[in-house]
Image (cartoon, rainbow, N blue to C red):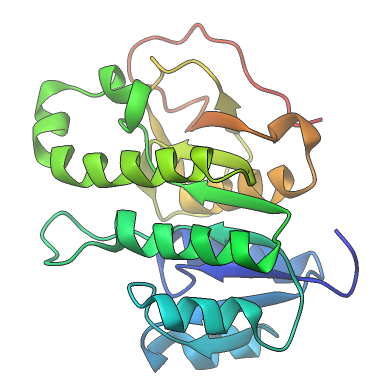
Length: 225
């Protein structure tokens, strides 16, 4: 990534997106974040992040945000809605970001979804699948749209998310049977490491804490180096 270019972050207001924002700026990387509401703006600006307001569900907002002012090298999206939200951005919001990234000539797109999406559906218990089915369908559509877009991509599917500080035990795997928990801060570190990893290009990876697995413990870790 060139020094003059920015990373565009969707979903920075909370959760994994906020952790990614903090970790990116700790690495002295330039970040531009799309926010729908002003609540998180002051905190993000205090980190040195350029904030632009807009709704990921609005194509015009997204295109304007990505194409305005500064060159965008990479887009990272953690955009998603809770299962009880009315209009979920999991597919449409990410679709708009992906399409705008293609138009803007972005080099790489990292999409954060969740274990249970696509071919990892078998990793979830029937109870978890029943609770999350609708949102997983939307996330799968987003993944498929990214894969078909022609962009260089990395898709990272975290397991159950926790808010405690990073453990340093977050790992990636191509094994779609694996499920477990992982701290949001560890997901952020894996995402940022994937930025400049050619090995991660065009890969779909599950992310778990190797000490917080549910069931099966024998799997091959994916190395970003």
